[in-house]
Length: 503
Image (tube, rainbow, N blue to C red; front, side, top):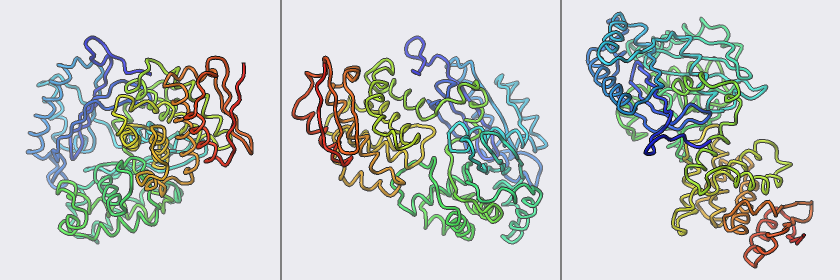
């Protein structure tokens, strides 16, 4: 659906989320409450409210001053932008600190901002819903997974089966709390003792583990850099479980100086990495996950997902998001041209399964995103946008599929170095990605971009041939360059090209 706008281009129904955590205060404005909300403003203030709280029982005074100032600014932006839908929550630090409620009351009195302090189990549930929002796999029928949200004050572990939360627990073992414990052996004993209090964990081994939280995401970014992974986006980045456990154990044994030298990260990212890695490593000793998958969404997106209707929750996140991008960046005011393109292309993948078909459909919706760029850079821009677009519900292999398909749509050579670099993450989607790209190129070339003309054209594949059928107005569209595009598509599919003129 298009981005809803009011007078002078202002967003009609934006949603503001404030997340007051133990480490930072986050303020995010989304364009709308729908299946694929886009961040239009994202601000983080590092306050460390939970620093030393394990010793003193009180919020960090310096952090209180920073958080109060930040919340005043956020309240000012909300008022100035006339945002009516505001959801503000606070987690471990506020619910555990002796002076937590006093701070909440002072914010309400000063800025009129109501902050809801949520319990550990509610935090776990909302984090799980953030993963469901992102279509990371745990919502699929028959699929199970464990979600881990590691923060400054707590660790939430949630077992999800078929879209429903089966078990959830919140442990007081966030980075600030572990750092108070002196020495690695004592920290390990503390973590292991807490994990033993949740017996359901031992019955949840071998599943995929979905990780979120700033410190754990820093571990993911470090692994991205070490492996020279070709995609820059952490969301949906997957690592084999044993390899992930070994990497976390290695990080847990490094000093901050060693980590800085090895990974080149800024100090604020390194500060909590050691204890966060130790917690991850000990959790993985119990769970033995099949894969570690990093989630770019969490509590804040869970607050959004929680408010969707049942019908909205069932929508395909990737298709909704790609449709929104199409209406924002493409030439068309509705999705009808892309529907015609999808009808033209997707039958080529009838034997490939639903995952490939939805990727091909998403590629159709994204196929016009660089129409306004100079032709010399359209292919490279399309590739970059596919790899980094704010899409939900797409794995790294799926992003690589979209990148190759869109680059080929704009005329890139399938053997270009920028595309061959992606083949290591395609997971068998190499041929379908190239087929989709060449089919998109053919469709846009044939119609001159007026995709509704495809109502008079179709592609039919048999074991030996690929036939382009042209009828009515479309018969006049045949030309040598169209024949060449069809031949390239057919050759890649291992078939002979034919053209049929009907009607």
